[in-house]
Amino acid sequence: MQWSTELRESSTESATQMFYAPVKVKRQPQSQRVPQITPLQLLLAALSTLLLGWGKPVLAETGALTLADCIRSALQHDPDLQAVAAEVAAARARLKQAQVGRWGDAIYHQVLGFVPEAKGDILDPPRQNRNAVFRNLGPFTQLEVMVHLPLWTFGKLGAALEAAEQGLATQQAEGEVRRAETVLNVKRLYYGSLLADQLARVLDEMLDNMDKAIRKVEERLAGGSTAVTELDLLKLRAGRAKLARGVAEVRASATLTRKALARAIGKEVTAELQLADRKLDPVPLDLQPVESYVEEALRTRPEAAQLAHGLAAQAAKVEMERAELYPTFFLSTGFQYALAPNRTTQRNPFAAEDFNYSRPVGVLGIRWELDFWRKQAKVAEAEADLAKLQAQHRGAVTGLQLEVHRAYGQVLQSREAMQAAAEGRKAGRSLLVATVSNFDLGIGEAEELFKGLGTYTEASTDYFRAVHDYNVAVAELSRTVGRELLPLEY
Image (cartoon, rainbow, N blue to C red; front, side):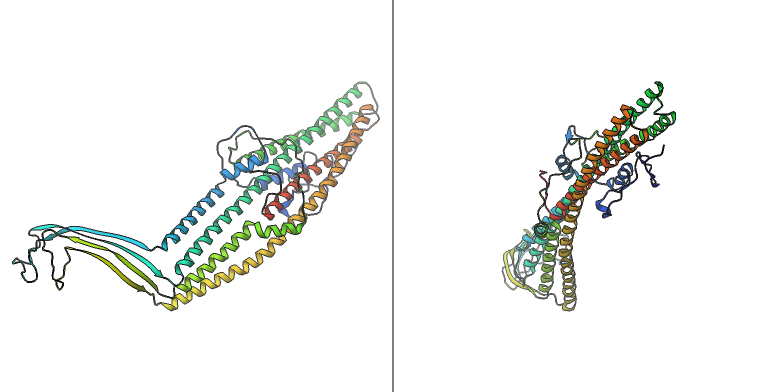
């Protein structure tokens, strides 16, 4: 009796290797496909990608989690998003600085000390040794309160405010980009966990059918039947042992995938994570024409908004550097006060008075840095950076359109593959039922049972793999469009 097909060798031994050969499908981009080998190879290869560092552990919660629950938890606990939130807060603080900068600045300055006694005035000077600075010391204070108001800056303050506003908007868009990436990662892990569980159930079902076949052969041999031989029984037992080992490997891999999902949503990896979905089903999607998605992506993609705000911020920086070529007119006003009780206040306007006075201050001023060559170079540098961003923006717009078309095509391709796999699974199920029934009735051979089990397992794993690919493709399309396309609230 021969096995159904010859399988290629791989680094990981598949639990279903004895029953079917790998199915060849159209090659997909690495980031969008699961390796098309065998169910166990698929699972183990997917884990190497899915188990990258996403999220940090927090306290575990009880209860079954839906996909929306997982996404909400990840958005709350993802350290990358927390870092972006801190960057947004810093950008908001810079904007506040630019806003209050329009009102100038205020300074309070005061000194305290001791001065020697001095009685009299310029017409009646004191008769004392001027070098006796430590004799008859008395307290002394001097304070100054000044406010400096910019009157005309040739656009410096306006450009600084615009740059700060656009910088804040850029950081907020960066947060939306990170948020979309987190949502996509959680979806991949969630669907990957469901796929692992589904493959384990398929292999469990095949193991159960194998056990039934072994019992049936043992009963026939005990009854003296010549339709089966000891060789058939030995092959069934050997196949059953190999399959049992594969089932254990798949179960272990499914557990590891679940732990990766727990870590991504901010739970302890040791937590017992329960998912609300028990089966991997295709997500409901009302697919619209690709042109509408391209138009929407140009409006709503956070990457596009991020680059647009970055352009505006750099343009404001150019204007700010140009304004530095011109002077700044300002008004300085305030109040000055000094008091030394042991010294006579000088009333003569020609006598200097540094220790007893009270006077308001108000002056107009101009400040102009005359290093024009250095400032011209800074303007040229800012203009070059702006030209660079403009070129990147043009490339990003066309690249965004291409990305939407690629993701849309992947959805169409995976949907067609899923529909074809569904028909194959239905046929494989019918074939398995027929072969098992024939074997139970004693009119079927063991080899036919092998082939039936292999065909059904292949068809089932192909189907659930296609469903997984379709769901991930839809998740990627949601990210490229910049909007959640599924009825999920998070």
